[in-house]
Length: 166
Image (cartoon, rainbow, N blue to C red; front, side):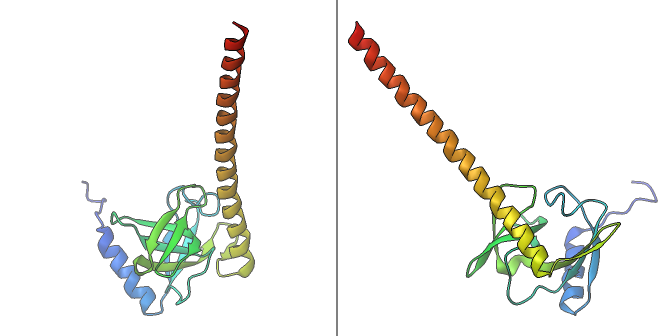
C-alpha cells in the first residue's frame, strides 16, 4: 500500500450512512456496478435518504444482503415482513427482510439531469419494465419447456409408427 492509498472499512461507512440518514441528512454516493444499468451507471451519483415507513414497489433501496454485502436494487414486490428486490439488469429476485434496509435512493444525479426517484411516473415506468422483463423470461422458459415436451411426444409417436410399419 502506498501513501496515497487508503483502506476504508465498509461496515464503518455503512454505519455512517445509517447515522446520517436517520438524523434527516442526505448522503451522496457514487454509482457502482452494473446491476442497475442503464438507470444507474458509474457516471451517476445517488442521493440517499431515510427510508420511508411504507415501502413501495419501484423504489430503490440500499440494503444489506444475508451474506453481509450491500446492494442497491429496486423493489419488485412488497410482502408483510420482507421485500423482493431486483436489479434493473438482472433476473434474480432477492428476498430481503425489511430491517436490512439502510436507505432509500431519492434521486439519481446524472451528468445531464437529476431524476427524482420518488416521482410516481418514474417508479411506475420502471416497475412496468421490470415486471415485463420477468414475465418475458417466464414466457420464454414456458415456451421452451413446451417445445421440448412436444418434440419428445412427436418422437414417441414416430417410434410407434415405425414399430407398426415393421
